[in-house]
View 1 (cartoon, rainbow, N blue to C red):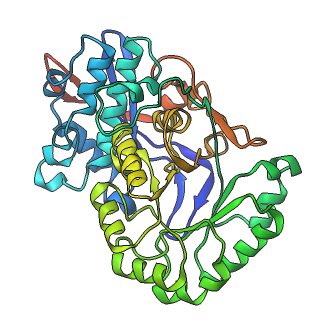
View 2: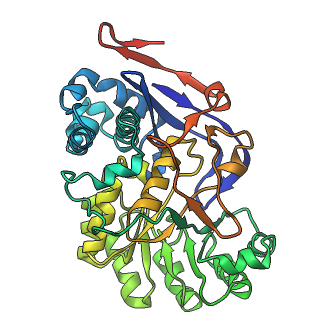
Length: 399
């Protein structure tokens, strides 16, 4: 088990945070020589987790007990048994009361490591886990329908970037290819201006959303609602889980609302739908607890008539964005897909193959090879710190 803190070449700013380095938990797992890597991105403002708490969550788990719950005889059997692991095994219920807040990112790191190792062991790409018949609550592709192999991705303009400059630096061809632009905003009046500038440069077929990160009051949002008409959605406009206020905002203004910090699982989504608080949800692997938890949340949203964005956490270092790439290109009723900007934040590649996005066509391709399709580079390993190692004969040992 490792932590990865990698300096970012450029900061990423939004209304409540400015990030200048990665903070990831990495789990490394050896399965008969097949090495799997998993990653979680603990974010206190989203799930209440810290990097230290997520590491404590992993160390509180018993790998021998996990192994005993998995059918290792076949790919389908192993994947189905990993998918069937309850939150009590991979999540916070298995932890001491003092660690109850430290669940989803630790679960994501464990699950992705398990799926990566199993997929490599059987020579299968990670995306194949979504087609295993006995995995419940994850819809399968209809027979004869091929995987997309590629996914269109949105452009995200963070708070410290001028919207006009960010769009004008694109070639006319690249700007015309944009299907969605997400603009980080804070001050309500400045948000209206940022939206106006984007509309001047983008065609009518390009959707625009504003991401507030919970920074507005209900009064702020209602005051400028008329100026926001026509946006694809407003992401997390008010304080997290303020269901009544969000529902009132939607009724009074007609604005579509996307949840992010407010929704980490099915209970949040059902509460939002029951109150009329949201029309969309941002699904992110780490905040949800892994590949299957994210897919199940997206599936539930689809059933409830809620649109889904497949999002990323800023500064994912490898296994997380690679697992997200599998969901983006192989499955999902996504309205938009985010890819991040790892090639700009980390000039030295952290994985082989390196993070890559086609920024002219604004799309990403599926990753080839077994497992997630990526391996850590020396640059990533140089910025990791091994916290503890588990072996069958010794148990957990602090490094």
